[in-house]
Image (cartoon, rainbow, N blue to C red; front, side):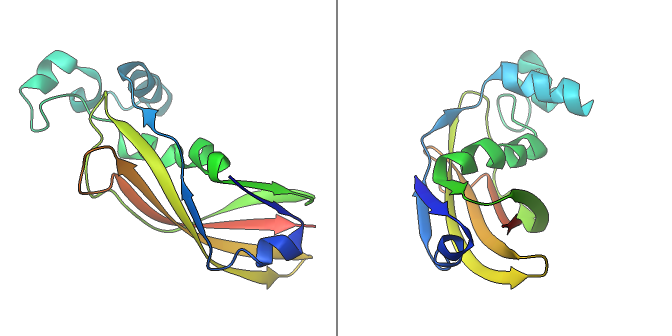
Length: 151
């Protein structure tokens, strides 16, 4: 894990590869909880019996579940200290190149693309994220995220 203390150290991260997180298993329970929260109960996510004969041979995680896991996984890559507030400012691009089968493991790789000053005594950090699937040539998700940190 990388730690940055204050805006100057955050700025120094520009261009840095943050490495990889540990692997996280995607369980049917997690997928079911997300289906309840998002009110998205499509059978490819929640019906293991029907999904066995479907296009993926098993249930798969929702794309937005995979995307939401950026938050806990990113916390394994970078710890920000010495700021008054940090906010998720949004996403510039998100793609889901491969489905995440239930029972598979994913991990996050991250790179700090840039860090620039923003009004209000803050910095804007742009990161490229890749959520990898153990044993898969294609990633589950690629995203460019924008975070702001204020003194």
